[in-house]
Structures are given as structure tokens and as C-alpha cells.
Image (cartoon, rainbow, N blue to C red):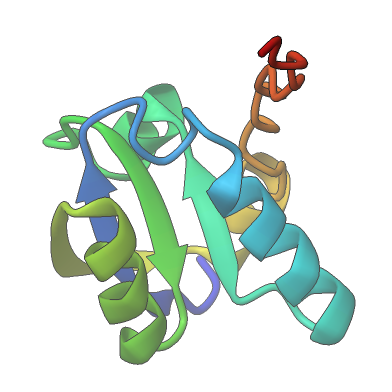
Length: 111
């Protein structure tokens, strides 16, 4: 077995991470700017594969400050987890769902 990565896991009740598209936008921007992926999204099924006691969606981060910032935004609890880089590459490179566009049409007012 190869090396494992020690990452910070933010565990959040679904659909707090995947429900509004903000995590998708953040991860997309980060991947455009960085040479390597530093944040991974795990829906409940993958979160349980990585850690059987998982109880919600998760984000894995290389840096604690990323996990802290995401916790401020989405809530949840942070812990550390060791994960195989090959498992991440095989299972966890997908982005979370995009947000649903809201109806922001403006109705003219009549006076």
C-alpha cells in the first residue's frame, strides 16, 4: 500500500455542502488557480467509504485554514483523516453539484 495523505475532514449534514452551489464555485475557482487539487468533496456514500462512521457530506482539505474557513461558512465538525492518494484520484475528483439558478426576475411596479 502506498503513502497516505493526512487531511482535514469537515463533516456536515447533507445538503449543506451540495445544496446551493457555493462549494462547487469555490472548488472550481481553486482548481483553476492551483496546480494540484487541495479540496475534495465527498457525498455521503463516499464519505462512508473513506470512514464508516461518517454521518453526512464531507470536504477534505490539505490545509487546516481551508477547513476552518469552510466550517465558518457551512458549519459541521473538523477532524483529521488519512486517505490514500489513489483513492482520492479514483473516487473524489468530481465537483459537488452546481447550484440551482434562482428566479430573480423583476416585476414592474404599477403606481
